[in-house]
Image 1 (cartoon, rainbow, N blue to C red):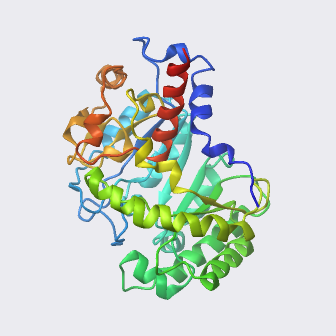
Image 2: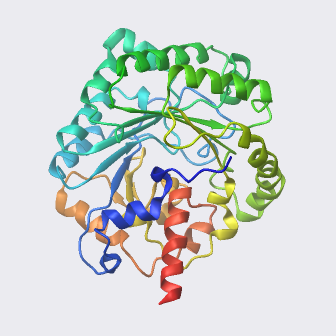
Length: 373
């Protein structure tokens, strides 16, 4: 079954709408706030994450943590009404570990912005039991543009431990937390609930995939996305090419046909779909300009502000725009610095930094438009 790509995955259209349909705003030397700020909270200031996923894209890069929460909150207040979305995830950090997390989410709503959360979900049940965290999350959410996205990556307890590199049973707690948030949501249209499932050798049997599909349908999540893990950030393209050939290309042949049986339409109660690695293919990373800066800027876990989320580590120093600041004029200057028509994307590619699927789609679409002029 082939269905239309979900609207939330049409990134160039999202960017164009953010620019009011006027692409002439790009590289016009004027301050235009990006569509979103991604904030990589510095976990609990001691450890980056409580999981040890072998496929974690930030596994081999430098992972310092620097407490910057107060400055970031101050900056958000000064940007009130100017930034449509705040996304909370991490190149190498787990946001639920951070004690300030709910303060950031609440402030997002006070600043008339939507929020997106990307988490392994391990602490959701505990936070709800101790703090009513999920109940509060639902209370502050406006609609499904505010969303909670869980990287589950397994349909069984045994494979969840393997895929996540852990010995503790978090799987049952995560499923319990998802059932709780589904009950809290009830029939309301508040808070999107999304689940991501990265397909590995340990979790992609027919029985396991059918099991997790049945569980997610029973819970009533809004979407369940299956995809092949991206290779680790920080590898040279010659190494990534081997991964592309041996893993992405080969497995994509299998999974494209396999998921035809399970795919549902975007308007289904639970939209189930497979997302091809073509959407992050290094063979397409040959463009000459980067306009992803108009879509996003990133506050990194190390206290630096970065060009984009996938390069938010001191392993890629050329992508550091400046230190974290709560001075609005200074921040505006960093945004303008990011809007550089002469920035060469090869600066990233030559040191093993790669585009995420959002940046790749946006930049390839921009390249096509420029070539047609």
